[in-house]
Amino acid sequence: MSELHPTRLDGHVAIVTGSGQNIGRAIARTLAQAGAAVVVNGAHSRDKVDRVVAEITAAGGRAIGVMADVGDAAQVERMVAEAVAAFGHVDIAVSNVGRRLHKPFASITVDDWDTAVRTNLSSCFYLARCVVPMMRARGWGRIVHVSGYDGFTGHLENRAYNIAAKAGMHGFSKALARELGPSGITANTLVPGAIDTERDWSQYPGAVVEEVRKRIPVRRWGHVDDLAHACLYLCTTGGFVNGQTIHLNGGEFMF
Image (tube, rainbow, N blue to C red):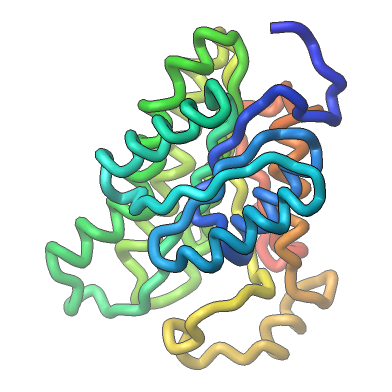
C-alpha cells in the first residue's frame, strides 16, 4: 500500500479490545483522532461502548461498537467480521482486555486458571489469527498487546494466573514480531505501571495511593493518555520498533 503521512492513520482500521473505559477508551479515541476507523469493543456494558463511539463520531471520526467476549474465539471471529463489513479490513489490532483478580495460589481452581489465560492471553491469539491474513495481504500491520508490569516484576502477591498470562503476552509479541516482520507487520507490548483508572480496589488489598505515588520517581500516577500516545507511536512513526516492550511506569521499575 502507498506510504501515508507518518503521524496519521487515514485509511487504516483498528480494533481495540476492552475499549469502553480506561486505557482502551483512550487508545480508541487517540487512534480515531489520527484518522483510523475504530472498532470499540466491550463485553459487559453496551452503554460504555456506545459512549466511546459517540465521542469519536462527535469529533468527526469513524467508529462502531461491537460487544464480544474476547476470551471466546467464536465471538472474536464475529467481531472481526463485523469490522470488515463496516470498514473493509483490519490492519491495527490492540489487545487491551485484562482481568486482574487477587487470589492465593492454593485457592485458584482449574476454571479460574483457564478463564484468566483465555481472557488475558488466548484473546491475543484469537484476534491475531483473524486479522493477520488481512495485514499480510496489505503488506502492513500493527499488533499491540497491553500487558501489566506485574507480568515483568512479579511484585504483587496472589496473582499467579495474571502474572503468568501477562508475561506470556510479551512472549507472544516476540514470536509474532520475528515471524511477521518480513510481511510489514510489527508486534509490540505496552506495559502500564500505576495508572489512574477506574478499578475495583477490592482486588488491591493494602494499596495506598499516596504511598505508590511516592515510590514513582516522577511523583505521579500515570494517565491513560500516556498509554494511548505510546500506542499511536507504535502505529505511526514507530515502525522500526518490533518485538519490544515499552514500560510506562514513571521509573518505578527500571529494566
